[in-house]
Amino acid sequence: MKDHISTLEKYLTPHGLAKLLAIPNRDVHKFVAKAVALCEPMKVFVCTDSQEDIDYIRRTAIARGEETELAIDTHSVHFDGFFDQARDKTSTRYLVSKGESLGPQLEQRDREDGLSHIQKRMKGSMHNKKMIVRFFCLGPLDSEFSIPCLQITDSFYVAHSEDLLYRSGYDYFKRLPDDKEIFWMLHSSGKLVQSVSIGWQKRGVLIDSLANTVYSYNTQYAGNTIGLKKPALRLAIRKANREDWLAEHMFLMAVHGPGGRKTYMTGAFPSGCGKTSTSMIPGATIVGDDLSYLKIVDGKVRAVNVEQGIFGIIRSVSKKDDPVIWEVLNSCEPAIFSNVLITEEGYPHWLDDGRVMPPRGVNHSGPWWIGKIDEHGEEIPMAHKNARYTVNLKNLPNLDSALEDPHGVEVGGIIYGGRDADTWVPVQQSFNWNHGVLTMGASLESKTTAATLGPSGERKFQPFSNLDFISIPLGQYIKNHLKFGKNVSKQPCIFAVNYFQQDENDNYLTEKDAKRVWLQWMDLRIHGEVEAIKTPTGNIPKYDDLQKLFKETLSQEYLHEDYVTQFTIRVPELLAKIERIEKIYRDTVPDAPAELFTLLDEQRNRLKEAQVSFGDHIHPEKFV
Ligand code: OXD
Ligand code: MN
Image (tube, rainbow, N blue to C red):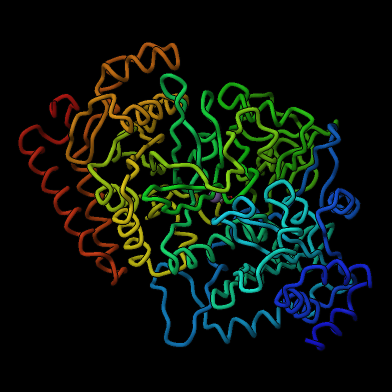
């Protein structure tokens, strides 16, 4: 104990130390002491969440060039290094003890070896830098969902982003019981040139679940560095596994149905596949766009948003398709833009924003002009495909009133969706909980996007849209979902959606705003107010119901021929999908539940029977 205090005294000013020691938890002192001894910062700033401290963080991010102020003075821009523009999956590893394995899906490293690697990488990494210590709460404060989380970073951009994204927790930490489990995050950007992290070849995100700690180094991209986002999700999945609840990569929103009723739904989509845009859809209210915790309370599923803000993909956000977020991004509410293009006048532009492309500006490659090429002769786009905006949910006009409800909201529906060109119909409902978990959640596939490093557009297995963050063996994770459903007296309905269905010429088959109709249909199904057609893969809408909903919701005429094209059951493609999924589970998931194979087999048989009667591509009304 004394040792820790004397280490702290060496690095912290008396004022800083007093701020830290106002939190009685000794593990907090110990973690900060170890971090300063390792990173050897020039100074340490302990943030108490006072307005003065918060202002200091933003001001310093700008003064140091990690952010630049824009024409609207509550807006700023941050650039990540050219090669540090997305989550790095291959350098993100779980530290495992000798003899332990999390299965072939997860990148792992021996714990002892990983911990000594961290010592090497992070030793002295904050020389000449200031360390920031921040306290947060994941989930609403003082609720059974709350998880306290301590973040240490040398990036004022990271600390500033967290202000917009998470619930402040300094006072909460002061009243924590000694035995409360805490998540610990240590991040260092490493060597900076022009305020940009340049050590990307030696970057890493190492997850030490035994100590509930995540280390991230030589990177600035928020998906690797904001400890409370994806690093904490990985720890939360392990905690949920121990405690029988679910930590999910899911939005949480309220669909407003007939008579003004609200039905809360969660939705799991891989990054860059419409999760944020669904949760922001006109006519609905948003609780969260990315991360939810789900628990069983009095036999019902209740959920909260882990966060309090949005770190959203800005590509394709346009006035026409995303009116709500467009307004917010053009208002005076605080926002951080990252990896967009900034014009000489100080305004952000991004890809597919529906405006005329500026001929020049500054982007993640430095000064930019139309036709600029990179070192391989490739044209550099105006902005990065994974450019982002960071805003606080409180500034959204469509924020749902339940965001801070410590009891969460009751979940009526769970949606799974991916970038799927040729198998799933636009919307379908599972026959029951296990069918939804196994043939929808566990069988999800999606094309890769720019949210992770590596090629985009490749079809990949993406169970529950959570594969990048699952930190326990996959079979165990699936079993947890089955068990969760069993323990619930009122199971939410499970749906699968597909916004990315394509024809043989690669044209998308549905318009972006059609998702409003699919949500309204799901709401009616949850309340038992419309019938459905039973197909081999799930229950699909009837044409008449959709026609009515298109008229009521979008004032659009929905053509029967569009319905038939979109809801055609594509048997060979669906059979091929079952083969792919089954093979992955047989070959690589030794602990997969037996029921998974049974249900896939039954689905295959239903599809084959239908094929014998009706052919390969089956008109949906054949199943009536
Ligand atoms: C995100 C992601 O930023 O999943 O939410 O990559
Ligand atoms: Mn996400």
